[in-house]
Image 1 (cartoon, rainbow, N blue to C red):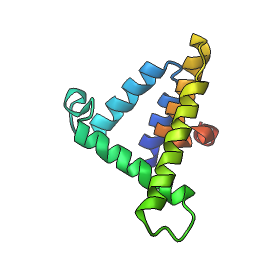
Image 2 (cartoon, rainbow, N blue to C red; image 1 turned 90 degrees about the horizontal axis):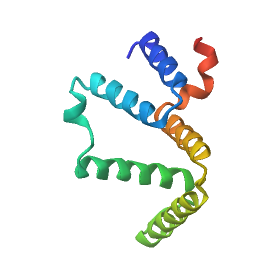
Image 3 (cartoon, helix red, strand yellow; image 1 turned 120 degrees about the vertical axis):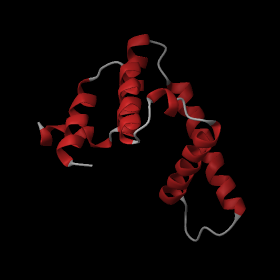
Length: 123
């Protein structure tokens, strides 16, 4: 994708302050890039969601595993640690609606547009 187009999309995403609007914009952009309608692409099917989780586990393993990684028990221990981390995140979500909205938006922006932290370089 052309850097100017990518930078323009990042600017759009950087200005969104509502998590639902951010998700909708990401879905629109993804559908356009895949030459599909948003309705045909989202929400993802269970198979596609399985692929997302599988990829996420692979990233988690690559970033957290002690080497050598050689057996099922090691992977099970790491994925159990990942599940514990997810529970910790759940337990720490704010009950304050505005704080929750801010936390959710931060999470979405880090996941979907990691270059947003460097948005000043393209303004």
